[in-house]
Length: 199
Length: 345
Image (cartoon, rainbow over all chains, first blue to last red; front, top):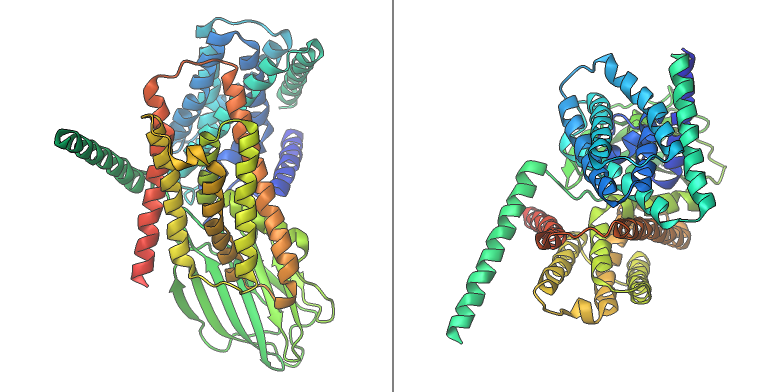
């Protein structure tokens, strides 16, 4: 399986760079004894099929006008938490993984085109993505990890990421920066298409 | 006048009651505990050639201790059952290791299962001739080969990591800094306040590590929790128009409580047990680590506030009560928990 190797390599790289910052992210999985809260914060950032759609959703939120952006800011972390809570006891249907991979291409394209969306659609997109990423992360929780600490950390990571995305896109108004954000979107879409075609 | 006093009294009572209900909620539902981040510790003292007294401490601040244990070279045996002892926040095992005439030299010491944790383990071996080696083992490098002559000791980076870990995993220090961030207006005053906090905790960290001042760690930890309650109370009162001391002179409050937090940091360093000749290096690097962690946290929070402001959200007035009451409840919970620790030992 080439894809898993690429995935491991990429997530390994991200994990390694995070380890330099916090003496934490050596493995995102069982972390007995210390900070399940931090494990929750780091877990979605250590795999590209979570990290890239989350970056895309944060940039998309930044590109929207005020109301849809606020809607996304609230729905995304809440649906992450809801999804993770639902995901803890169940075995994941494979459709969730497909949605996560597909969302990378779809959201990347939306960011690349910088499309303004109505609030309801923006909220719907972020709720759907939040739920599927939440489900996937919740289902990976081992018995040693306390969901009471993991899920708040997990939702906080989502909230921070979306807020930072909004802040970057709305504060850095220079035209070349705005084009830069759209380029990032197109890269995310490209990675999404690549991973889907390899699967 | 009397009416006013009664009114104030009932208000205070009501506030206390709501605080306690949140507190109970935090305590029972979330099972939130402040974990002081400590590395594991393996000490080996050579009493006679090839024979070592072992002390193995596993941090267990939250629930059961992680299933990590040291693995010695094949020529070493454990002749007697190890003695296990539970201490606050850790489990300690003591015993004897016999490695025959070859000793530990050239052998490999590994901490089993360390790679599935996010713990560091400090290993210190003192040989019969008085020489010693110190090594920090990590999840990504859980073993090392004992070279008696190699002057392997914990490098500066090891202590920097420890400092970063201590501040990022010591949520109590972060909550204190968060309280200051919420109180202090404007970047200049913030710089002044954070600098005062840094100078203060660096001073007491140095004094305590060099042994000039010694204070018992558990009461210090309890008072640190109380310092966060104090900030939370100031925040809550500000909403009612009371300008507390922290609002008037934030740097003074940061300095005063910074002295306490420094003793807290020193407690961590002391419990690891640094070899005497390593103290200046360890102190310096650990402090650098603490500052790096603190800067990262302050940057993250400020970036969050700055980003959020672009949306110009009109928050309902009750939301402004959430941060002070949440911070205050959590800190009060830690205070009670740490007080319980003082009186149970």
